[in-house]
Image 1 (tube, rainbow, N blue to C red):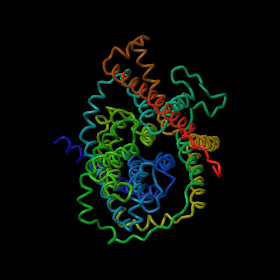
Image 2: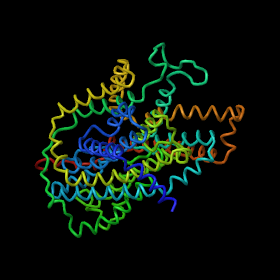
Image 3: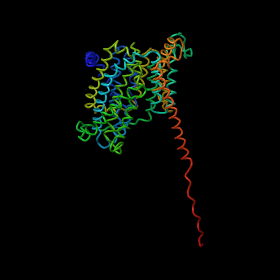
Image 4: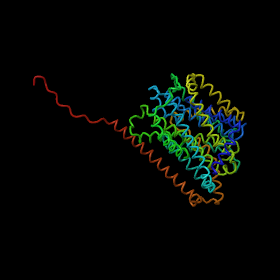
Length: 519
């Protein structure tokens, strides 16, 4: 009964006209950004951060969150129609969605992705509403030592569980920690790593870092990679699935929602890993695994449900413990801090209207997305015809205007341009940017809790291993580190063995001696 009363409180907050307006604006813009390949929710949210300074905290976070899960809905559209993923997590939809489009079943695939996204998001929200208060009660028992260990575990998980080379992920986390140290020390007032540049005494601007490393770098990278395709005409009749399609997708959607809810709540994983894990699980449990990759509708439904469930449950560690679940959640955490709200266990008890208003607005936003996506699929398809030589320059102009409006300082514009070039070089060397952003956000908070724990223990570092929860988290983090190095060495050894096998040709059988003519 307490859950229903809390949801009633949230809906009373979410049904205000201003909240509904900003929620609709967020989900509409998020769907638009998800349909357009190469832009992404990260750059859009960072672009909208300066606008939220003039909003209330509730409406600001509701609009930014709407962009986040709206992009998850729209990301699969370009994947199915043009084989171009609008978001990284929508790349799985290319595997079976695009073959369905070539078979003339693009409408069915788009309809199923919308239904699967809604069901996955709804189940993720129910899990979030049911278990977040319990996690918050556990969080009240956390002290500075536990918070430091939890944030350290989140950073290690971000670098090891994420896709790519784990060693590169750890390097990106360390770089993010170093960037977070730039600025004036809170305790001593000494400028650190400012290099006598006055603008750096306040630290690196979070908006400039996010816009540069995700926005400008993605625009530069997309110039030579994205090509316009021919969009297919979609009708309402072509969207109706058959009975066999409906029978095939029910269980995969439920399984995908469960997988996405689990991985979304883990710090450092995100919706991309949830989508790939759900696809791998469906292919393993399928009776006919050979159908996957050739237009299997289960290969479209399960990853979409996992993707959107992970998007919703990513708010669980962010709101209840102050630990971002992925890179976008790290940006959301920064937005909350900018508005003077410290996410954590006390947020639910001190600001219940804000917390339950967010959950209620997420439910309303997902209903809006179903209404938007099914009738307006034709509109999203027509937007794919926009020439990219017009789209990307407009994005660059908006990025420069947005970062300049934060402090009205041209130094931030130069900084975002420099960070964008660095982000593009990171892409060329396959260095992931998400762990860097997580390290940048969590670095100052880790330092604060580390100092606080050492002050309370009078400089005794054993406080981190004497407390059971802190010791368990640190031990788990050490195991993750060992596993990451071992997997990296194993991968390197496998590559060397394969290279050696290619370099050494197989011995040929001896040729028989040639007979002389006339012998």
